[in-house]
Image 1 (cartoon, one colour):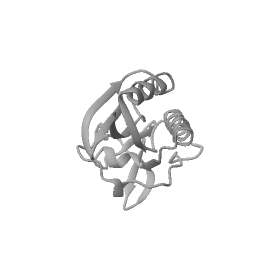
Image 2 (spheres, rainbow, N blue to C red; image 1 turned 30 degrees about the vertical axis):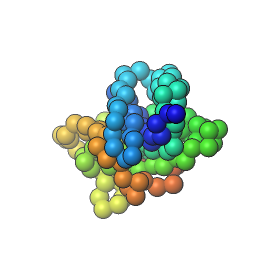
Image 3 (tube, rainbow, N blue to C red; image 1 turned 90 degrees about the vertical axis):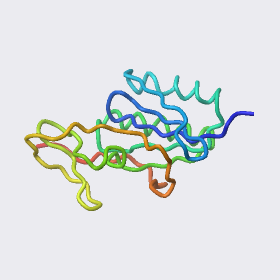
Length: 153
């Protein structure tokens, strides 16, 4: 019998980080510098052979538009095909609310619960970390991507 686990995906920037959680505790971390479109199916397949996956959690943005789209489409598909619930939270949850690079000198910032863009001359490097303990209440069933900004003029 496989262990029953939850998977947490942070795919917005390289390296991709995937956490395996058993009874809400982080028991394994998978890192990859490969493109998410190339590696997500392979990692998911490997983890599916080793564990029974009971929940999928991901950072739904802001960040790389393409990375957000790929993660959303892949995880939403796995959720539907394998009947696994999908949950999301914004990327600020995983980087202690630090500014996240948008384009040029524009950064995404979170003020209260609103995500905006701000021009910053210098911003700390946004280091994304998997939590040691998974808190279900910190995630939502609203899983659509948060692209953050529309067309930049």
